[in-house]
Image (tube, rainbow, N blue to C red):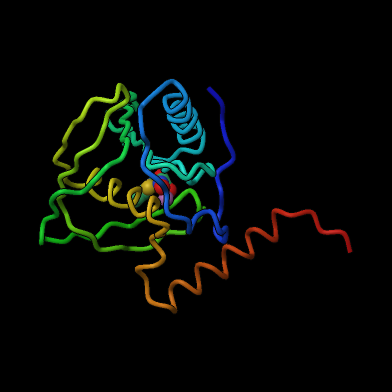
Length: 174
Ligand code: GNR
Ligand code: NI
């Protein structure tokens, strides 16, 4: 396993549409292992493959509740087959938009179909934070970020703060 660099907005790759995986083989499992290790090391609860620069329909999630006992979940080629009309609001963050958070409204429940780590077809009904996280990750597969749902004013504030962070991290020689 290896910890990969997480891409940070603005980055063209984050806007790319990811592609379905043909078969869950060793190479795909290795990418998912790397994604999980990268996510844990960044203290995230979810990660889409494109965030480490791989444009494939792969997601890992671990909500890390219950005294940090690990419960990794792997999703290959996920599809939302049902969304509730009831919405709920969560304060979202994104490892590709570090340290900046905003409330986003999404369907409070969803049902998805996907292949698991072994390549078996599976379905899942998600509620609460898991439903929010799955939808946030599936947006990454379409090149969508949570800031896209905000007003232009809020989005511009976040992008401005991000560019300032990025500048501060760079070495400046005057
Ligand atoms: O770590 C993360 N936390 C989070 C909190 C609220 C809603 C969604 C998320 S996902 C995010 C990790 C990430 O950027 N996944 O793409
Ligand atoms: Ni994200």
